[in-house]
Amino acid sequence: MRPPVFARAAVVTAGILLAPSVAPAHVTVWPRESQAGASERYVVRVPTEGQVTTIAVELEIPPDVTVSGVLAGAGFVYEARRDGNRITAITWKQAIKPSEVGEFVFFARNPKAGQIAWKARQRFADGTSADWVGVEGDRRPASVTHLKAP
Image (tube, rainbow, N blue to C red; front, side, top):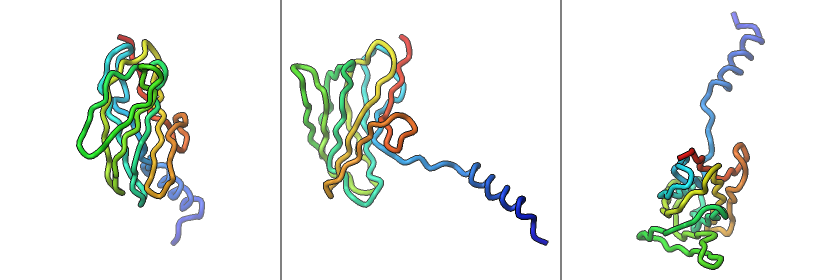
């Protein structure tokens, strides 16, 4: 005997609701939590999820964040865009093949309070790009570092 239609629908609905959601990977900045006003070592993680190699990522530096240095690494180059002495954006160039992840390090002083929204643009070998600039819940959210009181 087959279960009633409503019972089958309930089982399907429960399966959908209980299945783990798959969050798309995207450009993220770590740590996700830091201390307000502190100096921090940040790591930008750049996955290539699709079939096209990532060739560059540009990170905008929010106005209330002061970059004190960028770690030079093997296999990539970087450029810092400036406004006077202040670094306003960093672009790392490296071929990150599909299913690989690149990591880039910089050092910065956090603002005194709030949170930091890190806007990034990921560029691909076919000339396309993905802008990770939205708010939480958007299709392409900016990475956020929450600042706790000292």
